[in-house]
Image (cartoon, rainbow, N blue to C red; front, side):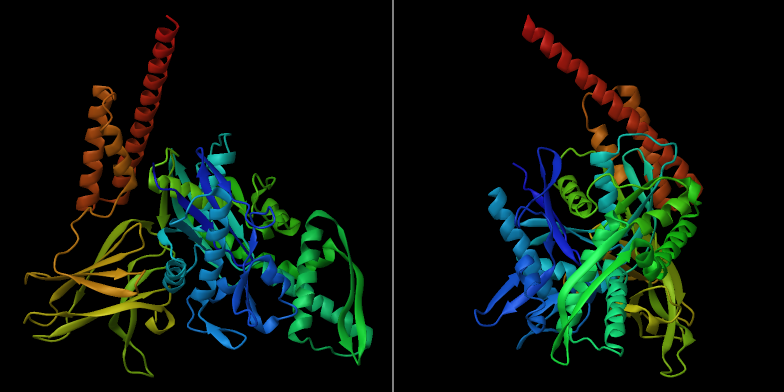
Length: 584
């Protein structure tokens, strides 16, 4: 029996866990019959226990100094979180949420959970992804894969809901959850989904829409007392809860009645909040936030070199996409109706479960090709920082939105005769200055005696597990070093032998090889498939032009589809014969 790999959406506002049951992705109801668990953690100092989920959220107003929410926004930061007299890292707080999900889910299904796929926003940087993996390990889990949320959502939308065909191969995933926003554009080639572009904002989400309402409520209360009101932590938490209910109510109704007693106390007297807010008023408050997401959509279209009319399907992910103002913006931009096919709060966890099934070998029939969320490169001396006097040029080796797995190399040159060493400082980001990007790791590469301006080749291989294999070669001197940047352990592992070309898994080649191994595949089709996969591998190895590789790839994908259809026909024929023989 295959080990079940569970999918977890570790969300800003809510989290959920799902798994494949009888070939279908299913969210596990673990709290009061609900699959969604508030991503809130509280410390009960009297009992010295950690509380997670709805009970923790219920303590937020009464024990604000002992409770934390939206910890996802702090992932990757070295800032401790204080709960009462104790301090925790963001990774530890997230591990409490993961522990709660896994423990409760295990009780529901009667199965111990060891392996998981955890989703992250596409725009999460290396530090944030590494922190997510660490949170899983602190919870005693084996994190088999980190998957971008839009990619997971695209998988589950197609796998569960969308059977109708469209003339366009391009789909867009618009993911607006509680604390982050992502938009990704994918191209569908048969069962292959390639991410063409991902843009986003890790500091924009449904919580920010709530804050607009909190400020509005504060103004209304200030008008009542004819003066400025300052909100303490408890009052702000109370207003935030009211704002969230109001936002949800306005998603279904044009008006919402707010009727809350004793929201705060002024001069010893309770101050009530009674008003009717129109959906139009709310939309005016948040229009700047909506336009920020629209700007990211335009950026993604531009990076994918597509127009709005090129997009065939639009998938909405995240509870905040229920707001009509969001759907109206997309409807106007793309000139088509916008709707939810499945629960936008659960589709990411369901997609993660489907990805887990793919990893464990379940016959899901979908392959995902992801892209790098940030450019990767090294520091060079082409530019000098005027303040520090140090080299500060970011030389990109793997550009953002490059398909992974990938392998890219650049040639650099030494500065002086008989230079002893070069420092390989790896960064990720989009700025020309290294100081404005995120450091990933560094190591030294000893040189053999050579003239000035001797070539040194630096190669990055980014694999599907998120590991970066770096090979440095002093060309012509048989001097080579390979190191692996281990995202999970945040360290570089030295190796003496470089990764052979082609070690990074190519999913198209992998699928073709699996089909070639099928004994029932007709000889002519097998020969065509074998010829094309050989030509495709050779084109990748020698670095032929993108147009030639794309042409071979399209031909190979078409042949893969033909092979799969032929095998399916043969399976049906065999099944029919068995039934006839049984009747006899």
